[in-house]
Image 1 (cartoon, one colour):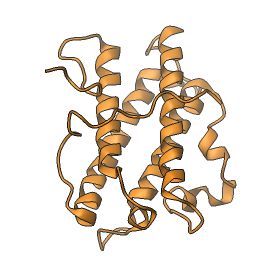
Image 2 (image 1 turned 45 degrees about the vertical axis):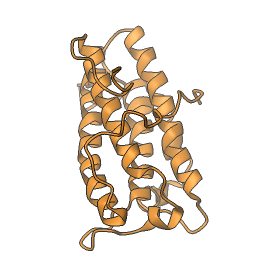
Image 3 (image 1 turned 90 degrees about the horizontal axis):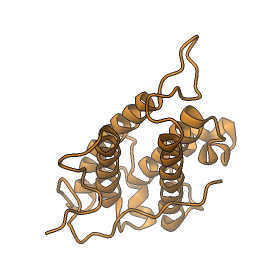
Length: 190
């Protein structure tokens, strides 16, 4: 049996393990969100939380562009810039009445595609230990640090997704089934 494409290598380089870990989290997150209609994407399935599946898809689209475009590479964060600045905090956690399920899934898929391209470029042009673009005083965190932060972000929200999806329709599981279609292909770089 061949491992699914999102499975990290059993033996590989540091880059292969880190990227593999992120890809497995992305795949699990997206599989948990898969196949829902727009009303299910808006459902507040856990009574004590405002989180929704659609809101998490949009939030992680913003995070993908923020981390891989802006923090790592100093390029405009596409998703963030597509929303009026005063509305980003609300927008990224809400599926608006005029949005469709395809639009919400598409936002996340496009951001992931851009992130994959950016990370490949950064690894090829200097590796994980090069400084990223974002500065904290006199310090510029490395690409490696930003990659670890993104893995943490997905870990946190994949856990949320477990609870939300189970409450919506009972879907449970740790990883997507091996025959589940892989994540979206790389998106054109904007």
